[in-house]
Image (cartoon, rainbow, N blue to C red):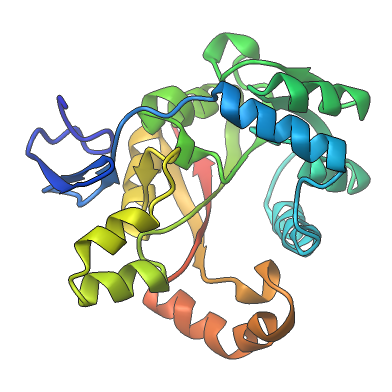
Length: 265
């Protein structure tokens, strides 16, 4: 490892070394491990989901509608939107119904074909600068994507800055190392279990602090950062509990992260 992918500090420590090595930056505390790429096994699982007609959980529709409401409340002179890694296009479909003009970048051939069948213009590849014009979009969205991209500033955030218009917004949803299970295991000093909680194809593990640092380095100013959001993400008892716990989780910066940032010069 040559340095931290977020702050470029060279003082890196191997935090855990069981089934995979997890590195921690000793300056910004960012956690990361080996590169993660779209592979054949993942592609087969996508094909299986498509055959079954079941990609997302039903409650995702509520979460996506809440994100679209937030988008519509942001100051913007246009509604041109690109989603990076949209999978089956559930979120983009809701965006189109709300009046947005949408495009997509999706590395999975199976998912890209599905998007094309839905009439969504899609580039079937990993996200790159050459795919769109400079300042083409008002919004760029990455939901549960940035944790999969090695060197997230160079390979995603800086590219999004190039594609966004001046004053445009980036919307990012990522898992957090400050979520209840991770925090509990750290308090119990259960290092082996803590390492096993990480999903193998994630290569970045953000906190509210490190997602803010990474986006700032790419040229974005944070406009909002929300954690928890149980009311939006879950059904049943968890959703009811969210009415009580969401304000507490957000205050303490615990739980999954929804970040919205604006492009600055």
